[in-house]
Image (cartoon, rainbow, N blue to C red; front, side, top):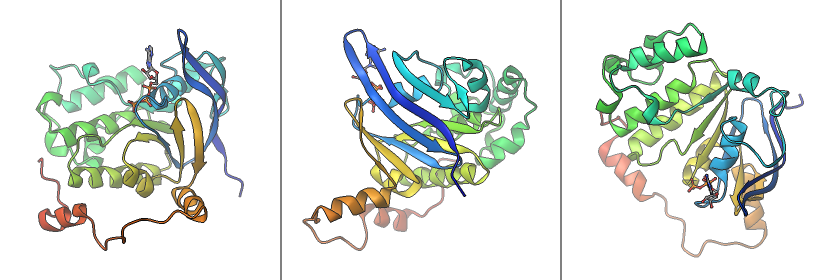
Length: 254
Ligand SMILES: Nc1ncnc2c1ncn2[C@@H]1O[C@H](COP(=O)(O)OP(=O)(O)OP(=O)(O)O)[C@@H](O)[C@H]1O
């Protein structure tokens, strides 16, 4: 069966004054895939995401999300996407349940806060304030809030930055679970192991251009076919494997 395109980006350009941050990139995201945007600092990943999320104006190019043209109906796009809020958007006086209820009200959507918090292992924190959460809990809550409006696509900008290995692996499982439930996931990350584990396909962005786009295995195969060979013998385990083996897979922050 033909895969359905849920995001179509064509010749997207973004200029900040004289500086061109995004230089005419084109890519498609298929329905229900986990799609990664990888690239060094300043490559233009966040700018690209924010344009698709309707949070930033583009200079030129076309963006179509689930058949909706960004230039024509940005409000309709907002209704079908889930975006992580800046932490400043979490009113300090409200607990997690109240925040979810508030956001549900803003989206005009009935929402079951306990169920959502449960999915992200935060049921015990239902009455806690955002500032009382650990780093991993904050990230889980932030991802949970992207699902409040039951979106078709969620956008995650560096979701595991700063987390310990247990929290990172736990979040990977949660992101896979979100996808399993039918949501398309677009993610930016600087961690190549994360992209390799999670992404069906990824685009490598550098200086505002896409320099490669394929599945992680496809990208690796292409490099190997060019004669690339690792200098050192591949180790049977990594230091992270040692760490996880010694400290276990359970989350520590709770
Ligand atoms: N509001 C702005 N005004 C001017 N330049 C900007 C603005 N926002 C981003 N830039 C520049 O555009 C380029 C792309 O930035 P962007 O944040 O999209 O990169 P990124 O790939 O997400 O980087 P990072 O991995 O560091 O988050 C950078 O050179 C950045 O300095």
